[in-house]
Length: 501
Image (cartoon, rainbow, N blue to C red):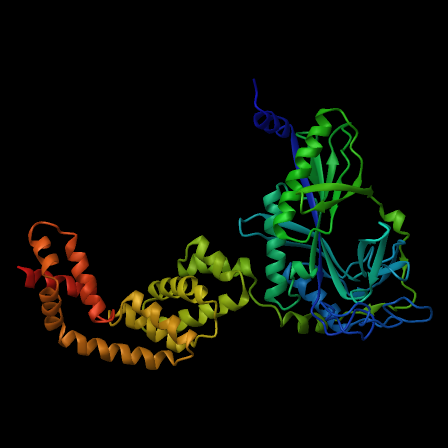
């Protein structure tokens, strides 16, 4: 009898997964999108960062935030998008307590950025449909009164009006992993370029996958659209809203694949709907029938005139571009010879990548390029990451690494010295110099120290001479302890063997 796992695998093979991903990113500005209220609302008292504009009071007029628009364009340039020469804002109407005006100022037919792409770490190219500017909504919290059991909701408008960019892919993603990798790459780029901290726990980045299953061979991807072949009728898509972690992006898609596959096989009609992700249960839950663009009754925003973007504006903004993570990762692999894993880890943040390059450039003054890259990556991913401190002076760390490479200090002693200097706030180069001087003194007296260890450990010496070779390791350890780890263990071993003869 076929197992449930085998059955699901066979059923899923009948269908192709199609995913389009929407990612909302709050941008790093000091004030909100259309007013001067501060954006730093996290853990602030509710409704303290508000004004008539972000509360949607009658007569209040929006004034666009220039820096927010620049950051939207910067993201578009990083994702290889075309930049529109005019900025048009629209009103997106829906009625919910978190939207005080009854509409959201957003963009509809003319996004600032369009037709771009980005490559993930696994080499998959993801097509970008659009990147547009809008304002965030307020935060709703739902409660139950202890004494009566009545349900009620509270609204905090501090988040209302915070600048938000929405990145929308074309329906070109074919696996849950690719969706996860894409979201990861967007977060990296946002942080690299200072566009956003993209802290998902704080709601600074949210993901919404649109998911559908189509029968194999009965559809095609053409001009950024999913089109039926022949008389095949496409299955509707399902949107999962406001996912707050990268891992949950992958999990929610996997869950929907299983759920939709089961419904298709049972002959049920798939509805276009919006679902929410329940992180506690690792399932999606029905929320409502999915809206269409017509439901939002888009109309041009009458209170904001068209804003022109000149070539000079775009050139000025493009000066903020730097090498994005996936490009840097490729260069580390192809030019510096790093492993894919090391290149990925080091390039994952701008801070670690820049620290690595400074360390590499310093080391290659004394080492060949291959050794310099290898030592820089090994020490960064090992001792430095373990300490969790990228403030260690490059020159000091370089001297430590070079001392180890020259054999002036052991790896264990070097790491111990590094940890100690950070923990006790000591000057690393001075401490290194002391250790090297101590080692020179010990080296000059190493024969005497070995002799003394042999005299104090007669039982171990007898065991060694009786054929217990493992005892030699014990004696080496005793010498290393006597020299406080400053001696070269290989040299100690050779002297011990010579004297024990």
